[in-house]
Image (cartoon, rainbow, N blue to C red):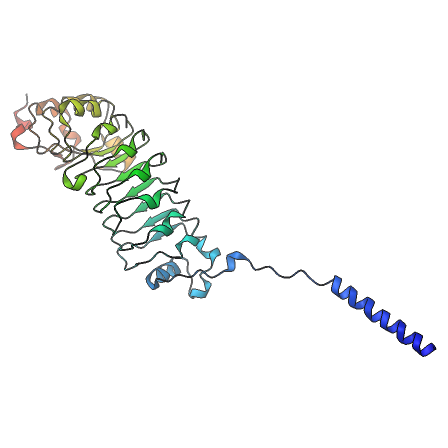
Length: 308
């Protein structure tokens, strides 16, 4: 009987310690999402990302590493897919000139993106992939198939827009963007210019404005130039103007000066070519503001040497 009681006591003691061991079991270790390996299907993009992030093995290209990426340069590369780039949630700058990527939706999720340069790249006609992005500051789509810019409507963080040599004809989505500082519409509309240049009238902060090949005429030119006191470079070649009188007040207000050139890091330049200017001498007092070759006009307008 004593032996039985001993066995019972021993059993209870074992059960007690077993229960203690179970209660003291550590919590299961949770996987850190930042340790997850990002799958990059495009081998060229993989190599660029690894070099940029100083990673020597694809297995080390984790979500955490991708979050460290703020600038990505894939210009002139053979990258054809951006899948996986969504993980770079802190990416601010993408330089992607001359790339041929058909699916640009991975860019749509990069909410911190501020600068996108896709000059000479393969692009759809619509910029709809930019719709979700609210922090864009600078975009460059020069020499691309872009035609519909409705996705830019309301993006008042934008200060630099380059639509040179695109198929854009209607810039209505830019209406109200008085914060713009750089607007290049040189030979937009398939080379024939835009249909509504009046949108640029209130944009008084522009230091760069190109309307080349857009029909403007003297009256609208006067309205557009009325408040452009920050101008450093302007191209109004082949715009149908005959008078440079609107430029006088712009010069008098201090535009096209070295001080502004230094401020905006932009050359001083004015292109008046292919316009039948009749009063070129009105701006002769400011000829010396321009470096050699940066003030251009057509021979039909005469020459500054003929001015009194």
